[in-house]
Amino acid sequence: MQLLEERLAVLEKENAFLRERLAKYENPKNSRNSSIPPSKDENRPLKTKSLRQQTGAKVGGQKGHEGNTLKMTEHPDQIIDYVPDFCVECGSDLQDVPVEFIGKRQVVDIPIIKPQYVEHRIYQKQCNCGHATCGNFPQNVNASISYGANTESLIGYLFSRQYMPFDRMREFLNNAYHLPISIGGIHELLNRLTVKAAPAYELIKQKIVSSKVVGTDETGAKIDGKKCWFWTWQNDHLTFIAPSDNRGFATIKSNFENGFKNAVLVHDCWKSHFQIQALNHQICTAHLLRELNYFIEVHKDKWAIKFQQLIRDALAVKQKMKHNDYGHFHQPKSDIESRFLELLEQKVDEKIAELVSFHKRMLKYKAFLFNFLKYPDVPPDNNGSERAIRNIKVKQKISGQFKSFGGAMNFAILRSITDTAIKNSQNVLKALFTIARLEVTD
Image (tube, rainbow, N blue to C red; front, top):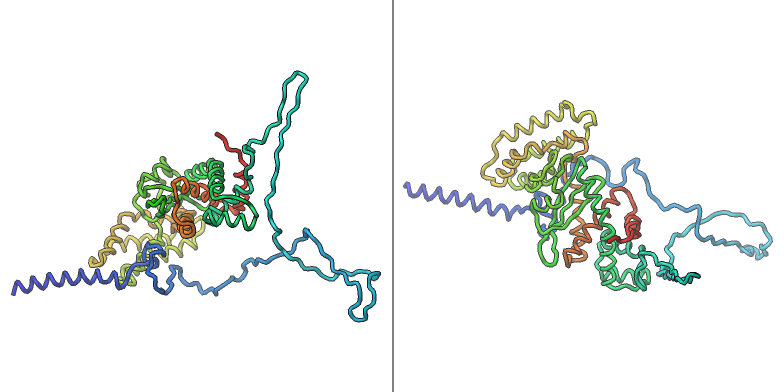
């Protein structure tokens, strides 16, 4: 009898283990309930489930939003007048009849574009002393024929903003601009533009260091067939991107050796981020909400439901807080913190291994979950960093892998400047043109 009971206990334990394994296949993790990227979701139709809660607002433009329509210009480049010469009713001559203006319409179009060839010539003059003095070519005119700043900046724009592969860039420039250029020529111009952009790239990095809030994230990428990573450090006005063959602390240390002494570092709880010096940390609540979605959908766990509601209530408190509420006692904020501590004191279902790990992680990093209620400029999530680094995936979807680390570095530098220009409402092409006009210094 005792042997049967022992055997039964073993079978029950094995049954529970197999059920837990089977649950992973019946209710797989995806981008809606975990940190798995959408690209790895199973290829089947899924009902969209946003983390955002309904507000009751109708779909489309909201009341009071600013409209946007094509407007006429007061100074058209060309005016075409249509004056009748005869009466369409009786056929009488109207050439001597006074004209009355009754209406106008405008058509906006793009003129046919063709390359402009500018020839630079130098001359010399012979002085009475016998010395011949020559004129000098501009410093950026250093070959018998070369491409100018407009071409250089446009290629940088197509590369870093529109993610065009080199061959499609060549085709576009030939078809749209009648510009003869090879893939090698495009590569050379990108290298030249990147060298000029390096000081601006370094300046962005320095400003990130002195920021009060810095978000960071990383994403995998293929460089010359090898698994590498692109990292970003960013805020509302700046984006700094860097490639690396390492996903660990070494990359952070090599880019920001002295850390972020003045900044709250916002991230997804990756352990390497906690190793660098920072004023404080804020872990991404959007990641936590997705994880909690999984525990609720698969296990119907009540503790997870309470924790998810706590985070959502904290987000609602953040939206209503005024500047004076930070740094002082604020009852709703205090209530959130009390509920949080109560939840952490509660035990979770030990049968759900991942929930146990989640609970331990919250205990370990409890000081970093609701810092967005302590600092007015600190966001509750790391969505800004994810937006800043998502372009790497878009670039690779369109262009494939980076063929070399140098090419990856070119993209990181130019994309950092591109994203920074976008955040500051600047024209990206004009920003790149300003850089392209700079002279390369040795």
